[in-house]
Image (cartoon, rainbow, N blue to C red):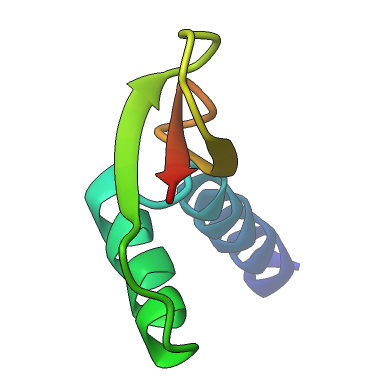
Length: 73
């Protein structure tokens, strides 16, 4: 029984860590790597506050949904 309670506790801590999401710079680097691998050039990725007027397409969210990554060509 003690092992079960310990396992549940550890899983809940791990779930909370994954819920935080990735840092904006880490996610931006991953998106850039995917675009570069597809041969896309002449683009920019910008990190903006969620809901801020941004000229481009939103391609990701980070920092618990408080920021967005905007793709511009």
